[in-house]
Each structure stands twice: as C-alpha cells, then as structure tokens.
Length: 137
Image 1 (cartoon, helix red, strand yellow):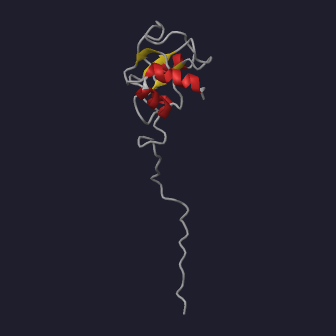
Image 2 (cartoon, one colour):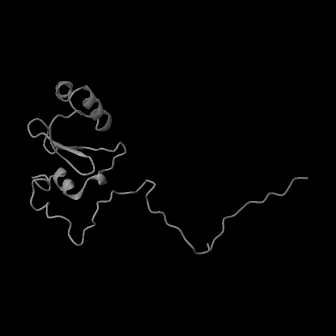
Image 3 (spheres, rainbow, N blue to C red):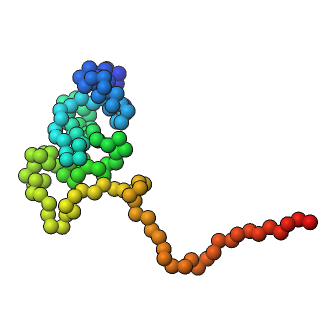
C-alpha cells in the first residue's frame, strides 16, 4: 500500500489510463523505466530511486488472466533478484536454448482448461450406493 502523495505523484508521471490499469491489476501505482518487453508481450519495469527495497522491479502482464508462470526463466531470475542484469544484457542468459531445455516456454496450466486430468480405464471395485425407497401403502 502506498501513501496518497506517492499515488498522486505516480498518477502524474504515468497518466490516468496507466494508473487505473495498475490499480486494477497490481493494486498500486508505480512509475519507472521500461527495461524490455519479452516475446509474449509482458513489459518489465525498474525504479531504483523511489521504491522500497525488493520492490524495485515489476512486470506488467499482457494477458488479463495472468499467472507468474507466464514469465520466462531468464526474466524470472531478474525479477526475483537472482541476477543483477536483465536477460537482454546478461551474457549468461543469452546462451540460447540448451539441449535439455524445452524449446518453448510453457506456462503452468493448473486450474485452467489445459490442465491434465487423470482418468482410469479400470473397472471400479466399489460401486456407489443408490437408495431405493419402497412405496408407502
């Protein structure tokens, strides 16, 4: 939660439309420099001067139904302060796809239509009880 003065200052810096978007999706207004945009359309920002420690980096998701697993591994390392440079500037993160990595990043499909659903082809050993009521006389 931010103070009224900080919210008004960020409203002036980012504009009414972006401030309303941030309040709706993040619950806070933030102003910073755009670091980069990944191939999925997510925008990554940083503000080292005015934000609290460990709150200086944030992501603006392209999708309205966002999930943190929609961030690529290199950007996840940067946004969670594991590396100092973003993947666009870090030579270690620009090595490309290794043989053991998946060629495309896949988000977590839990609680969505793409989630894995188990099914069984075996006959159930226990049958559900179905009550049968005798007609009253």
